[in-house]
Length: 339
Image (tube, rainbow, N blue to C red; front, side, top):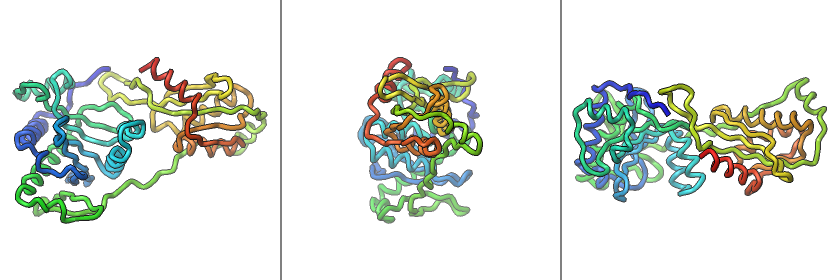
């Protein structure tokens, strides 16, 4: 996987490295409550980043900034899910900036070059600062200029709140209830605001739909008593379309015949093309077999929402079950081969 150079000028990077060094020197994690994030509003975009300080457990030291309503929803989903597939889905779908300390060998090439260029020195295990930008269903990548500036501000504001809490431990209790403390820039300086969290509006799945003569043509095909199982999941191997470009994690769409365990179709697609890929995969299977199935079994409500509109037009029943045993077994085998 080709990694481009870190395309952020040194005048933006130096304040970022200085900010994370102050964070470590002051042991900010000792003075920030473990319960819930602290918001910082970006003066450039107006978006709120929800900052979670890491270090109280002495396992990982750093700062995670969940960006906007989507990022906050990811944070809440991970907090509630605990370890397991749901937590993995939340991580893959996350909009987040991450700063932490680790070993030199774990740094990206551009980070090592930046540290050398800036004349910075680090010694010891887990002493090397690292920064990553997370976008949904992509590989963690270098920060861009705007992200570097915002992450620097987040460090500064979290440090400020930690300093104030040394004098006033009740600072974090003022809002109460479900409100989150947000640091907001104004012409007079930064101020505290207690805000109800803004969560993303639910978005219904879009799906392939047949219209007019096309719908009538598919209905001329016969219908058998076959039962199909469908599954979707992230591919274990990221895809990079061009050298230096941010790789993405494609989704696997799988259809199997429940009785014969025969793979009817499988394909990869970018996550934002998933709805179209699911519908096209079903139609491709119907076309290849020359008949519509009686039932399509799924164990994912999201997948059910993508399949149901098309299945209704094809007069195929969609059954949501706890586990699609055949499809999941095949999916595990595919993942083990290509992971």
